[in-house]
Length: 124
Image (tube, rainbow, N blue to C red; front, side, top):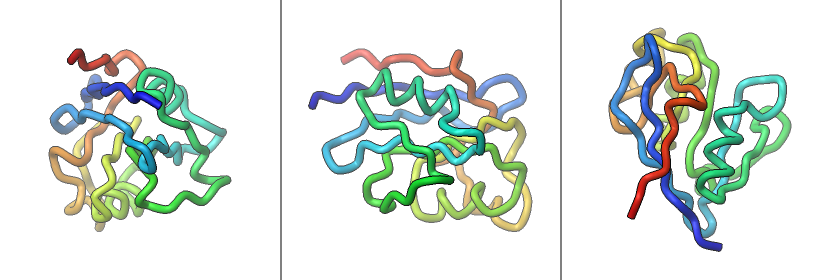
């Protein structure tokens, strides 16, 4: 399987520098932890990269297999735990990191306010 890279940027009201997502064999899961199934943003990232979108609330995936995670967190656990594990984390909610775990959400590993319109293929 040949994977492609995408760049995900913050959207309106978002925070953080762009993240480049490029799955590799064994680390090709695009984890959606948003409730209501696979979020459209996670699905788009999977489609463009060749990764596999997974509903993280219904399925358990080892951290080492996760290329990135799409979340909808307003400042509690997911916002900090995934970045603390060095998993690229994309929050569909806007705003800067907050709450007790917000200290772990740093630029280069976390961004917020992303939408399907803030994803683009990285050429080359």
